[in-house]
Image 1 (cartoon, rainbow, N blue to C red):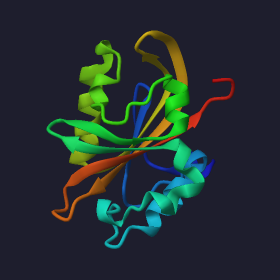
Image 2: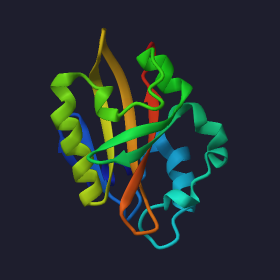
Image 3: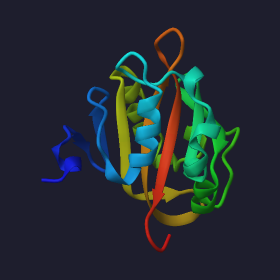
Length: 164
């Protein structure tokens, strides 16, 4: 059994959720998870204040950073791998503005569940993009805490499928 398969997950269609303790072992995202784990000081999640994107220089193109804004999240940074995949730079846009209307409610529920856990999430598979065909990708969503110990941001990491 692979290390990835040994981690406890709750499957929800093309989404999986992991508890933050222990930090999951997901080989495709090992670099990002290792860097994030180094930022954890109290055994739970990294604090937003501890994240310096320059520390993630090696994987920066595959990252996006979003900040909580009401029930949604506004992208503060949208890496070039995300831009290439979606053929658009969503920096400054709300996350739920960037998904197909048919997936908006499920996306809101997913991020609410990640915050409530807090949990680390992963979305894989074919996802609709506005104005384009379905796109293959694999995204990890890692909650970041504020100094008040609530989720204030998300660090998103993408692995593009070959040929996309």
